[in-house]
Length: 239
Length: 370
Image: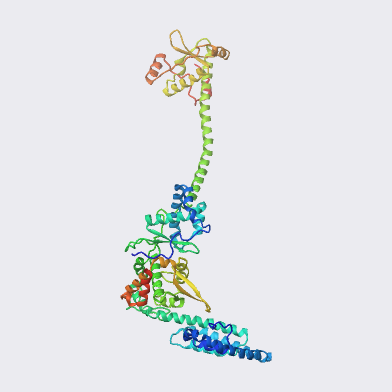
C-alpha cells in the first residue's frame, strides 16, 4: 500500500499555553520513568477508547491520563503514537485540529481473510463501503433522499427493521456519523429539512477514493478508467 | 448587481444585468464606464419618479403592495414545492421563475417587498447551484441502478424465485440469501485500514464475584455461630461429668478406705487388697488411678511394711499439715501392672472380693464391710 497523504499531522495542534518552545527542558524536569509510565497509560487508554470507534477527545486524554503532565503533553502523544506504530501497527491520527479529536487506524496492509470481528462489524463495514462508493461516484455529496432511494434497491429501507442491521436509519445517520465515517449537513432553506451526506474524516483516513473506485470497478466488472472524471479525481488524491 | 460600484441601481438597469448573468460578467468591465454615465442620468430621473410614487396617496399603495407581496409569496412557494422538477436539467422552469420575479420587482417601491424579492433570490440561487453541481457529476455518468444490481448479484441473489413482499414497489424480483451482507462485508474489509478493536481476553474486571462471596461468608458465620452456641453447652456437660465422675469416685474411694480403717485403726490395709478387683482388670487399673489422686492430694499414704509389701492408710486431717512440711515425704512411684501379674496377685493374696465396689452399685453395698 503506498503512502498516503494524511490530512492532519501529529503535534501540529498547539496547547492553549503555547509552550512548544519549552518542551526539551521540561522533559528533563520529569524523570524518563515517569514519562514512560504516562506513555504506557496513554497507549492503553487509546486502545480501550477505540473499541466503539468514536473519536477520542483531547480533553478526555488530559483529564484521565495526562493530568499534571500537561506541559509534556505533545511529547507523550508523540511517543504513544510511536509505540502504537512499532508495537501494534496502528497509527494515531488527529482528525479535527480545531476540536482536537483523535482516531486509531491500521498501519499494516490488510491481510486477506482471518479477521477477528465480533458482532455485525463485517456486515456494517460492507454497508458502509457501499454507501461511501455511492457518495463518491455521485460527486462526493448526495442528498439523503437519493441515498435512501439507492439503498431501497438493495432491500434496505429507512422505515423498516432490517434483518441484519436493525434500525438502518439510526445506523446510518447516528452511528456512522458519530464514528466520523459519514458527515451529514442540513441543506439550507429546505422545508421539510433535507440533509446531504459526505465522507467523514475517518473514512478519508481509513480508505481512499482510489480504493473505493476499485471496489466499484470490481463489482461491476469494469476497468476503473471507465469512469474518467472519478478516476482522475481518485488519482489526484493519492499524489 | 452592483459590480460597477453603484449602491442602489435603478430598476431598469439592474434588470438588464440580472437577465444576462453569464455574459454580463465579462462585458461588464468594459461597459462599466459607459453604463455609469448612462445610469447616473437615469438614476436622477428614476429617483424623481419614485419620489412622485411615494407621494401618491397611501390607499393605492397599500393595495398595490399587498398584491405584490402575495404574488411573491406564491412564487416562492411554487419554487419550493416544485424544487425537484426545477432541478431537472431539461427544465427551464428556474429561468421562467426568475423572469417572473424580475417583472414583479418593477412594482416594488418599499423595503418590505424588496425583502421578499431578496428571499426569492436566495432560494433561486440555491437551486441554481444544485443544478450546476448535478451537471458536473453527470460528466462520467454513474448508473447507480446498475451498481445496485451488480451488488445484489455479488450477494448471491436468486432471481428465479419470486419473493412475495408487502411493499412490492420498485423492488426487483429475486430472493436474497441471509449471508448476503456478510459476503459484501468480507469483500470490503480489505478496503478499510480499520484498527482492530482491543479487548481483554479474560474480560474486564467486574465487581460481581465479591457479592456471592460475602453471602457465603455470612452463611458460614451463621452456621458456625449456631454450632458454637450448641457446642459450649455440650462441652460444659461433658466436662462436668468427667470432673464430677473422677472427683466423686476419688471421694467415694476415700470414704471406703476411711471406713475400713475405722474398724481397725492401727492396721494399714494391704494395697493390693484394697485396689484389686478380682472380677475386672480394667476396674483394678481404675482403682489404682483413683488412689493415686488420694496420695497426690495427701489424703492417703502408701508405704512398705515389714514384709516389704505396699500398704495404704488414710491420713488424718490433723496430720495433713505436718506431713506436708516434711521434706522428702513425698515420693513418686510408678506402678506397673499387667494382667498376668494381676492374676498372680489375686491367687497369692487370695482376693475374692473387691474392696472398692464398682461405682454403679447401690450405696448400701458400699457401706458393707467384710
